[in-house]
Structure formats: C-alpha cells, structure tokens
Length: 44
Image 1 (cartoon, rainbow, N blue to C red):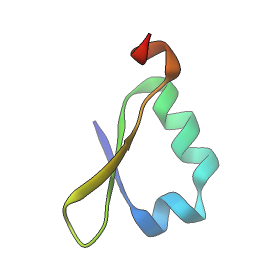
Image 2: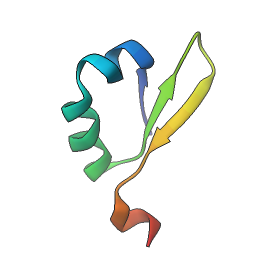
Image 3: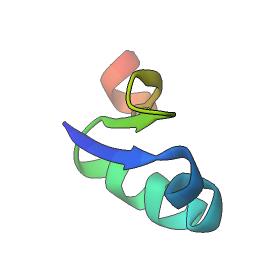
Image 4: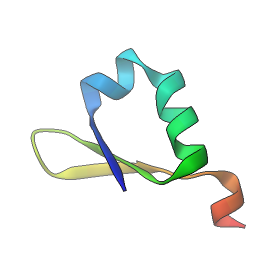
C-alpha cells in the first residue's frame, strides 16, 4: 500500500487518483493513517 501525507495528497490529488488505480493509497496526518483511497473496481 502506498502512503502519502495529507499535505502531499492535497497538493497532488491527481497523483493520488492515478496511484489508487494501481494500489490502495493510505493518507497520514501527523503519522497515523487517517484515510485511504481505493479504485472503485477494488470495492465492487
């Protein structure tokens, strides 16, 4: 699973979406993981 900080995710949201097509992306804020982005195909 790829990990990005909340600041990185905010500044490059398009890259988050592209990465989520390949693998889940965890978003961290002050170290703990607070969110994740998945491809819709992974959910269904």
